[in-house]
Figure (cartoon, rainbow, N blue to C red):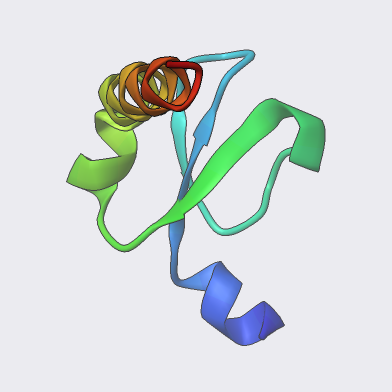
Length: 62
């Protein structure tokens, strides 16, 4: 598992940098992502997921 994580990419929320492997504390990073490009767009993915979940929650409240 640890070897696998070393070959994946993470987005550091504190610095805004993409890192290969688990370099930063877990509280600062989001991932894993398969590619550098996916990790670069981590914030877009997080926003899209949040909007989707908000819509789902709204639908359940009806």
